[in-house]
Structure formats: C-alpha cells, structure tokens
Image (cartoon, rainbow, N blue to C red; front, side, top):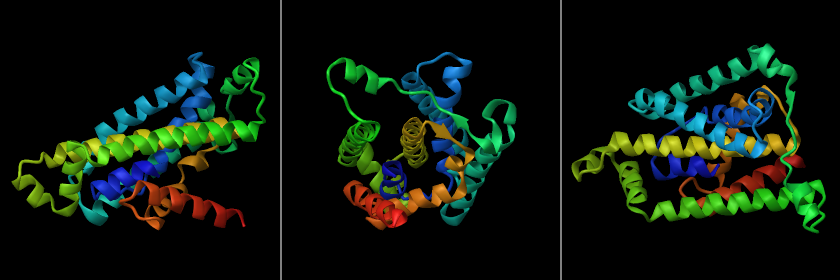
Length: 236
C-alpha cells in the first residue's frame, strides 16, 4: 500500500494489477527454498528483484498509456500473473496452494532469550518493516526524485517543460512500487506459512488501492491509517 502511495499519490499513475507483484514475492518464498535451496530471507530479496525486473520490462510500454488505459493494461498484467500461478500446477501446486517454510528468526530470537509467540513476533517484525518502508517513502517525498514525481503528477506537460524526464520517473515509481508490493506478499506468505494464487488476484489489487486511497493516496501516514481501518472493518 505504501508502494501505491508512491505510484499513485506521488507520480499520479494508476495500477490495478499490483497484487501480481505481491504474488511473485509470496511464491518466491514458497518455491525458492524448494527449487533453489535459498533461505526464505534471501527468497524475499529474490522475489523483489524479479518483481523489479518485470516492472521495468512491462512498465516501459504500458506507462506510455494514461488514465483508464494504464489501469486496464496493469490489470491485464496482474491477471496474467494470477493465471500463471493458478495453471502451472507442477510448480506452484495450482489453486490448492503451497506451504511456505519458516523464516527462522523467531527461533533465533528464542536462542537469544526473547521467547515470542508467533503472533507477537509477526506483529513486531511486520511493524518494523512498515516503519522502514514508510521512512524510505517519506524521505523520497522531499528528495529531488520525489519533487520530480509530484511535478509530473500535477502536469506531465509542465514537468517536461522544466526538464523532468517524465518516462524515466514514471518507470522509477512503477519499479519502486512493485518492490514494495513484492515484499508485502513475501511477508504475508511467511506469516501464514501458506500461499495460494488468490494473493495475486484482482480483488487483492483493488484492496491495496482502496487502502491507499482511503487515508489519502498522497500521504504515507494516511495510507497506513486507511489500511488499518479497512483491515478492522473486514474482520468484523
């Protein structure tokens, strides 16, 4: 959802397929330990790298579009990722989903004398990740890149007139937001110890956008508030 703030709130671009990147991150944590022998922590990095590369390759053509056309193109990308995860049964186990190995940090903390329950650990760990992600996004806001993103949000023509490389900064925002989505998908999979293709589904993309918009798409803190409100309402 913080990635959506950077893409939509800062750069003014619409994406309805970001759950696809969350799916890549989630399945990286499930499949990389099995097929590559990677630790789940390294699988998070691998998923983020794959998502960044895909966002770069896909973003170059689709970010030439604007408005609803960009939204539809990104939606198609997300649906395509969902279909691959659902249909490649030999690798992903299809709609039945697949188990995700333990991250191992809770056991390490226990060895250090900090015995946390599973819920306590994940509240603390994801909270720390949220703070780091929010800190990066807030620092980006007032950086030269952040000012360029906000300039093209206001008017791409005006931004181009004052020397902003519109295509470059739109692509940067798309790649950064994809990495955020991938990491969030990885953390979700590791917390639940299970993942299914639904993590890359259309409704998850809509949920991510709703979380960001509910508290104000241009505000990192507002998006966090919106995510909290939507999560609480969903559980009632």
